[in-house]
Length: 122
Image (cartoon, rainbow, N blue to C red; front, side, top):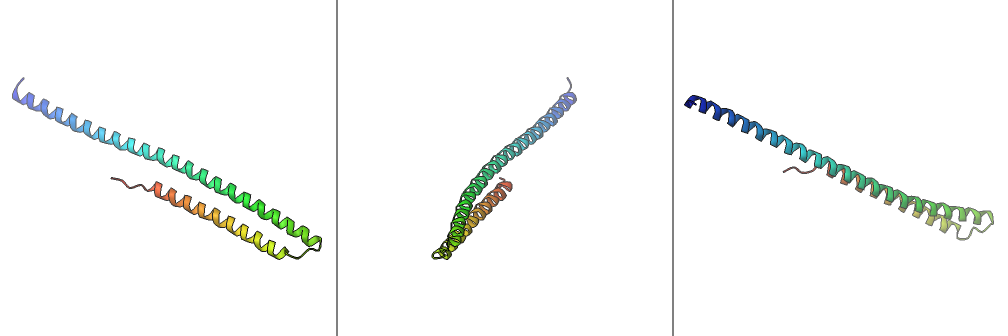
């Protein structure tokens, strides 16, 4: 081989090495994105589970409120109005607390989801 042929072979090898390096970087970036996507999907599933648990807790509180309202209605029908207003107020407070707890959990879940959707990148 001549010097010129060796120089040309070296240039081609250098270009191939640069191309391989770019391809490796692209593969690494793609792997990072896939990992972030999987992590986001897992976080979304966790958030959905938390929201479902908050909704279940809210449903339990709503049921308790409905039971209290039913009791108030029965007392009212029986002419026992003493204490009915107090129980009605308590039922409304329970409902309000349940609603606030649900909205708080929902807000927290949305905040975590937004945080996960925009991760800090090195």
